[in-house]
Length: 385
Ligand SMILES: [Zn+2]
Ligand SMILES: [Zn+2]
Image (cartoon, rainbow, N blue to C red):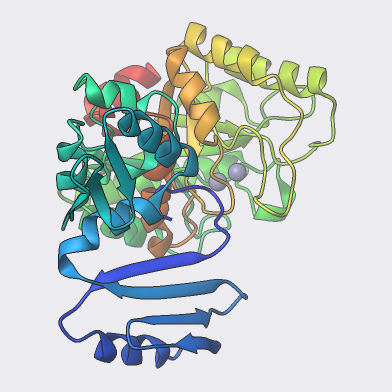
C-alpha cells in the first residue's frame, strides 16, 4: 500500500505504542471489521469488508524504522539491498543491521536513519522496486518526485450537467478548499448516450454558466472543458467550432473497445493529431480486476503524443489507474506531458488525486512532468486557446 502498487494481497499495518494492548483492543473493536482471526498482546489479524485480511503489529519504538522498511518491500528491492551490503560485512534484517565482524545489532527508529546508515539517500516507497533506485541513491542522484502539494488543479471533473452528482459551484468550491487554483469541468458530450451527454445547445449554455460563476467566485478559475468521445473511426463527436470555444478538450474511448490493435491505435492517433484535442484520458480503458485494457500500441501513442505536444492522462480513479505505472515511466522517458485527472463525479472523489500521485511517483515523475502542477497561464498556453 505504501508503494502504491495497484493491487495488494493483504494489508500489513505497523505502529509503535507505549501501551500496545490498548491499541490492539481498539483495532479489533473497529465497527467495519468483519471477523477477528487472531489477537495477541502486540498483534492482531482481521478480515475487512470485501474479504481482505489486515494484520496489525505493534513494535518497539527503536526498531520501527527497520521493520517498516522490511515490510514495505518490494521484494526485489530488499533482495538487492541485502546482497549489496552482505559483501560489505553487513547483515540486513527486519530487526536492523548487524555488523557480521562483531555480531553487533544496530536498531533504527526511522527508515531515514536505516538508509542513511547504508550511505544511501532516503528512497521513497513508490520506487522501491529493485530497478535503478539503489544505485542512484548511492550516488545521491534520486529525482525529487512529484507530491500532492505540487498539484494546482484538476482537469477532469464531471458535474450534474452530465453524469456527475454535484453542481459546478460545489465542485469548484471543493477544489478551492483543496488549495487548487483551477478546475476544468469536463462533462461528457452527447455522443455517449448513456451518460446524459451535453448536446451543442446545452454545451453553449454551460459555457455561459461557467462565465457567470467565474465572475462571482474568487480564488479559483473554472475552465470550460469537455470529455469528448473518440468514435470508432477516430473522429470526435462535437463540431470543431464548439470545441474551439472551450478552454480544454479531453478525449477518450468509451465504446468499441474490442477493436483490434491496429484499429484502436489508429483511432487514438487520429485524436492526438486533431488540433482541438489537448488531453487523451484513460488511454487503455482497463478496469482493475474487471475489464482488460484495449489492444493498443502504447509506444506509437507515446511517440505521437510527444511529437504533437499533447498530454496523456494518469486517470486517478482507483479502479482505473490508467495510464499505469510502467506506461507512465516510459511516456515520461519519451518526453510526453502527463496530467493527473481524478475523473471525479462528486466532490469527495477529488481526493482520488493521491492515487494518481502514487502512480506518477511509481513512474518516477517530477513536478515538471505533470501539467497540472503548472500555473494556469502555462496550462492555457499548453492548450493554445
Ligand atoms: Zn471517460
Ligand atoms: Zn470522465
